[in-house]
Length: 87
Image (tube, rainbow, N blue to C red):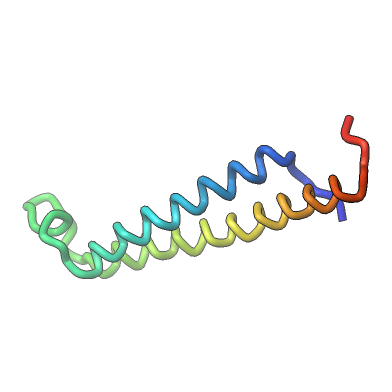
């Protein structure tokens, strides 16, 4: 199987996805626990559980990106080990 995207794009996507998963998981957890910085002011959302569910849906999307981009990176590693000539 051949990779679809370049190696740099695949590994960049992996790094971005990891950081997005970490950051969004923390923000979603803070909304779920009704932290006063996120739901304590007048303009903040009243339904913090729905906000946290939406954020965790984004975490699942980034996890899917992580898997797909990680597989692309692994395909590049396998291709380079076999001695393929990159033009």
